[in-house]
Image 1 (cartoon, rainbow, N blue to C red):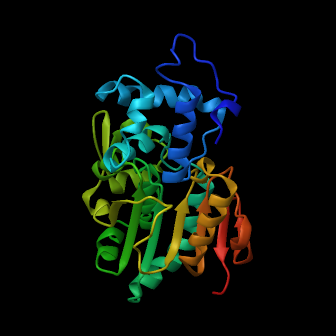
Image 2 (cartoon, rainbow, N blue to C red):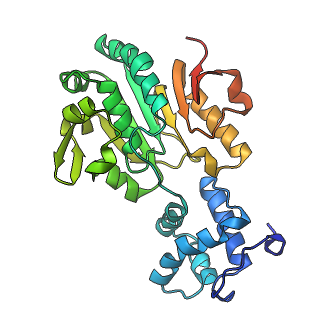
Image 3 (tube, rainbow, N blue to C red):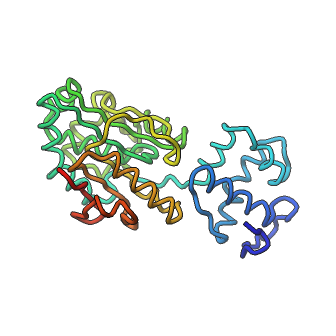
Length: 289
């Protein structure tokens, strides 16, 4: 990419010796090659504000030197990618997804698990866990025995993200009490524990989920196909070819009759559209059941 052709946003008070169009172009390349993230020129200020703290923490004084130092430093490269991604989420976001999951999908999955068959659910791009716990509490519903029962079955819930920091928050499963208010009252009563200003997801719920770091652009180690995949508001970072490849991989990893839930501004496009049928607002089912 030719840095001089960029409409680089001028940043008042910031010397180009510290942060230049060439630096922004380098971050664009790194973000795209590492995680498929597309950074348009208007994001130049965001890049500066997100990465400047990392530069200051390093032994370097300019973005150019800091970025050059990323070569071969996988840990620092992960910090850069995590800093560039926005982890904005909340409980029961896009409520219609959970209505559909609870009313249409969950009964069949629970029946399947009860009859000894494996059930697999994936929250891809789980961030700090609000989506994951919304999925699990919806699945459990209002039967206080459900968590213990499902723990004895071959039901597994996987939650993944690129960012170790948000994964740690998701595992801790503790949130401001007012932030959990979107969870239906009976689900809060059954599956959470509140102490003053904080609320924690109950241990019997947490034991159903495995959290792991995963870059969606890299190899996926999962061996079984999934009954349900949630990947919402992740593809907004990607260019069109990357979106198409990712959705195709999701389709391949879904069982026939499995469901894919995506973000409100996202669509199934490309080759995967031949096998995924839209059955609701940003809800798709894989053909062949």
